[in-house]
Length: 76
Image (cartoon, rainbow, N blue to C red; front, side, top):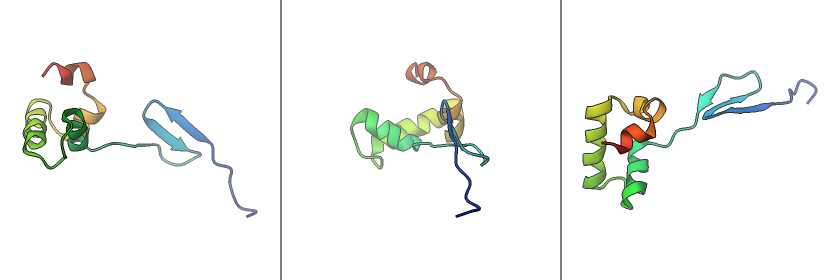
């Protein structure tokens, strides 16, 4: 226990960092967000269609989750 470091937790928006470790994002998959929005299961046809539509318009899933403003996603 003598070599144990105290871990300082930092939260800067969605970016988390523990002490001197590399910061990371804690993300929920896009299909799960869509499913929750529509009140259906993530494997449903409606979710797949909406997912494909968003990917076609905005690009990849990480770009949608990290960069695209929610208002812009709602406008689609």
